[in-house]
Image (cartoon, rainbow, N blue to C red):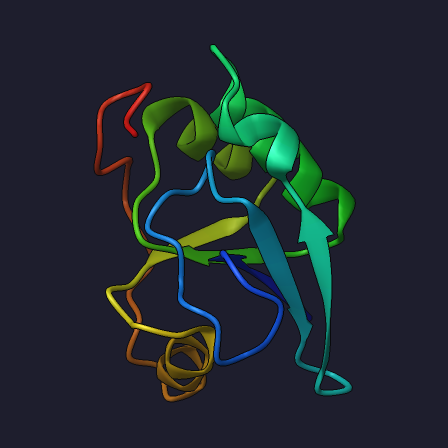
Amino acid sequence: MKIAFTVSGDTLEAPLDSRFGRAPKFLVYDLDNASFEIVDNEQNLNAAQGAGIQSAQKVVETGSTAVVTGHCGPNAFRALNAASVKIYTSEASTVAEALALYRDGKLSEAGGSDVEGHWV
């Protein structure tokens, strides 16, 4: 199973980015073999519109079945939900911390978006 984390760095110790659609990168962690890859999301960082939907599409393309982020807007939430990707929000400071919370079952699945569209 793969989980995508919004991140601004390239390691598990990198800060968890609070924005889904405008996160600079995704760290895609594979729980089955304890490895990860970094997926660039730079093109959506300054997108005038559609960042959430385009980022959701990018996450789906990685094969991720879950996302851990700080916040998720309505368009991204709908796009991820339509692709059966579970969304978890977290205030963890690093990807490693958020991953530990996920593994321990301490993250709750989001029931809807928690910010307005075009949130920066």
